[in-house]
Image (tube, rainbow, N blue to C red):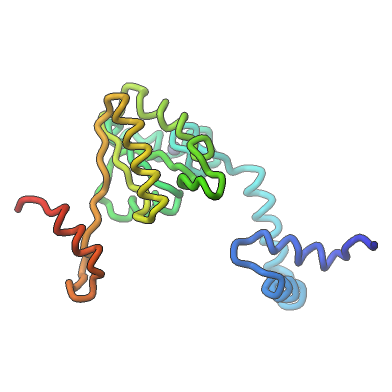
Length: 198
Ligand SMILES: [Zn+2]
């Protein structure tokens, strides 16, 4: 059998992207070669550069080009609070709320035994070391409210509580601007259960 052609190789390579099947990979390859060679060159350079320069922050595990990221180095953050999120995108969402001034730990995933993602894959040993380094007073669990996110939150909560740490979970609720009739009953039920005194 012949070695795959350069074009086949490109199409195969594009299939590493999530949700990209053979047809879309082919379309992308044709587009890059026929319509946007400058874009293709830029993409190639950006990927190469990213792979060479981007690593995980030693403290919070998010993506950074430094040993310790800017947020972890900031003296303006409250070091007694540590918020656990699944992804760097979740960290950004938390930052956009402007309601949280503590530090973070990014799991880069969630527990998912069926996919072979266990405590080791989401770096729980590092989280444990970070949470017990003497500066953290409370860990805020902000994993997703999916089955896997909830299981991850539960597992981490038990783990950290057994070490004497204070652990909290962000509350679910009615979306801001949301009308009750448009909220699903599960969300509304949870909002009632997690009500606070006014
Ligand atoms: Zn960091």
